[in-house]
Amino acid sequence: MNETPLVVASNVVLEYHDGSRDVRALDGIDLAIQRGEFVGLVGPSGSGKSSLLFVLAGLRPPTSGRVAVMGEDLPAYADASAGMRRRRIGFLFQEPFLVPYLSVRENALTHAPGDAAEGRVEALAQAIGMTSMLDERPHRLSGGERQRASLLRALANNPDLILADEPTASLDQQTGHAVMDVLRTHTKDAGLLVVTHDRGMIEDANRVLFLRDGRLKHE
Amino acid sequence: MLAIQALVTCLLVLIITPTNAFEATAEADIRPLDTFTVVNPRRKAEFDDELSALLDDNPAQASRVEAKFLWVRTPMIVSHSWSPMIALPRDIWPEFLAKLDVELIEGSFPKPDSDGVVLHEDVVRGRGMKLGDEFGRAVNVRHTTPGKFTLVGVFGGPSRVGLTDLAYASKPATVLYRRPPVQVVYAKTGRKDESDQYLRDARQENGHEAFTVIDARYARQRVAEVFQNLPLLIGFITGSVALVVALVISLLNVIAFQVRVDEFGLYLAIGHARWRLVRKLAIETSLVAVLAWLLGLGLGLLGVYLYKHLWLAPKGIAIYVIDARPLLFSLSVPVLSTLTGAIALGRRLHSMDPVAVIQRRGT
Image (cartoon, rainbow over all chains, first blue to last red; front, side, top):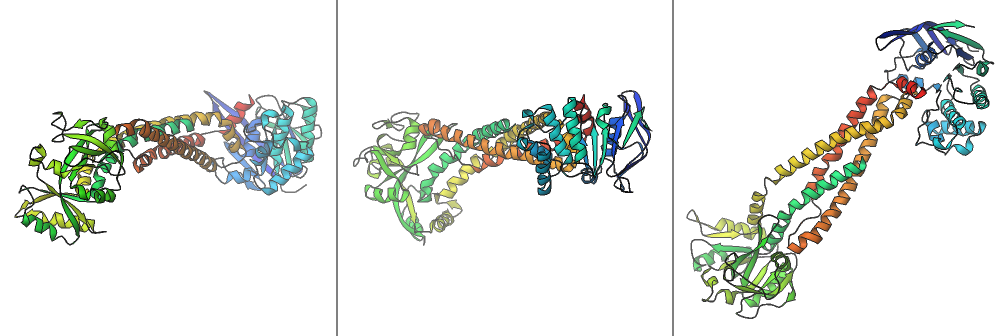
């Protein structure tokens, strides 16, 4: 493993207002993920798992604390330069979240346009058995196929860090394991952080973190 | 969106273009004056030796011929148009018509000394006449052309002109006898402007006009004076319509954006810069606007073409189907709709929270 962590969160706090209520979603998070490391993140609903992913992805600026990706502080979301760096992060959502009027191939390339990415999408599609579906629109695919299509998009630019927010939640057990196998196989050199309620999906994780009330515990 | 903008562009073209019917019809009436100039005595009953000598000193003059000059009134959309009708000696008719590129397409030329007249087909249609019909104030007091004439032939060609026999118009028994003769002046080839300028300069005599020069410039100035305030009306109509359309389009753009909010939330979430998305939306909006404008123009021009041939032509009213004014005025629709649409969408995108979109999608 590389000595410089891929992502570092230091004393990260995230607070926001929910109506008249002040919510402290993350409360002093310290976290480091190394390149090649597979980290599972579990916790009850509302514990702050998704919030942590959004902060690590740069989609939510922390109220306080510091997030660094590949040695660089991740600027606030509004910073235009954050966009290019955030493209080094693959995000896999709970829902496939595909653009309905684009083909699977076009959806995959929205994250990483260019010939190199196109070649990688072709290779990935072959590996996960989606070559014949590359030119299909999302509405013609099953739930599992759509999630695999979103996997193509997340992996298209060979990201350094993959953040996956319950990627198998809407899939059956068999399809969920297939998606996780693909994710593991193609992210061996990247960092992988998977949020899940299903312990079975992260049984081969290097580490499993437990989040409760915005505080992190290592298991 | 595209259909609404196209429809509005089409309507603007259909509303604005017909206003050029006044100018187009006037231009057809004026066109003969591009070939010759009419000089009308003011202080004397006719061109005496002194006035004739003054005309003949014109170095750009090719020839001149005595004639009687009348106007024939034709109903327009509003008010009337006035076409020239000239009483000329029979022997110069062929040359006169050849220079105007006008030819007899129906009926015959007037018989010698007869009250026969040949009018242009537009005038005949506009007045609802047929061969054998009589007109003139002696026939109907509401007619503005003095005397009495019988339609015996119809001209076709680009210039609206009527022709009758000078011998008839000079008969002592007719009211036209008292009408002073004019001079129809032809310039040498390529020197019409010079000839007209000479006549305009020569007409002043002791501070008074010795004769009136009726040339194309004079006629066009008169027409321009009549229509000088038309752009005020058209500009107001177009500006108001374009503004309302722009607001409607920006509203529709925002509604359309709501349908695609997940898509843009996703783009933001995976790292696309906001300004790139705003640019993408602006390009999409402007492309739709330009396509709609072209489609609207096509439909509008087709509508004007049909309007011209089905309704205006039978009334003898001319119109320019292709007119720069409606094209330019209607351009305000795509410009305003693109601007307002892009600004509205840019504001929406600027305030968009991709996390909220993702979370909403996940629920």
